[in-house]
Structure formats: C-alpha cells, structure tokens
Image (cartoon, rainbow, N blue to C red):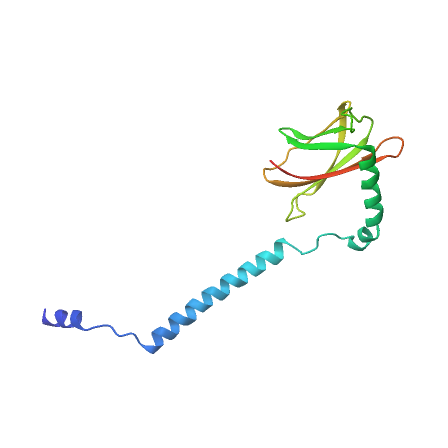
Length: 162
C-alpha cells in the first residue's frame, strides 16, 4: 500500500523528448492537412476560364457592336429558372413580344465545368421561350444567344439560383 501511495505522489515531468514528439506531431498534422487542401484545390479547379481566350479577345469588338445593335432595337429579355426548366420572356422597347428567334442557352456553374450544358429554347407563345431542364440546386450562369430570320442577333446572360 505504501508503494502505491509513493507512486501516486511522484509527479510526472515533461521531458525534452515528449516536447519534441508533440511539436513534430502537431506540425506534421498541419502540413498533411495543407497538402490535402492543395491537392483538392488543384484537382477541382484547373484555373482555366476559357479554352479560347485569344479568339474571344479578338472578337470582343464584334461583341460590343452586337450589344449596341441590340440596345438600338430595344430588345430585352427576362431569364428565370422555373420548376421544370428555363424561361426567357423577350420583348421590345414598346413591350411587344419578340417572336421567331432561334435561341440556344448555355448553362454552367461558376466554379466548375462539370455541369456545363447547352439546350435549345422553344417558342411556346410569341415572345416566351422555354427549355425543359432538370437542374441541381445552386448557382447557375446562363447565357442565351440566337438570332431571327433577318439575322438580327440577341444575347443575354444572368446568374440564377435554384
């Protein structure tokens, strides 16, 4: 019994070896976590925003001219995600529907290309275009481009949430 009491009274001392092991274990854990995060970050986002950046840069002035032409016609579109897809309501400056366009919507996520898709919009009534889609919840970048039979182009883009 006396030995047990002496053992309990003996105090534990922190040795240099224990401090070294604890320090190495702590920094090893921090370095391992950082390496895991770096690997995951590089694996999920390539850093490439566009595969055709140079060509898109060359066409920038044409894009500005197209936007100015669209403003002069007064065409405006309202994009919305509806329960079963994508809706575009298109009108002119007087509020009349703009009908007869051939439109394609490109949908993507802001941070990944894994969910990119394109879909044609179908005119259901004059000035109202729909595309049936089954989209996951979250943030979507939507770009709609097209033209009418006379060659007048239309382009609109929006960030939508489901």
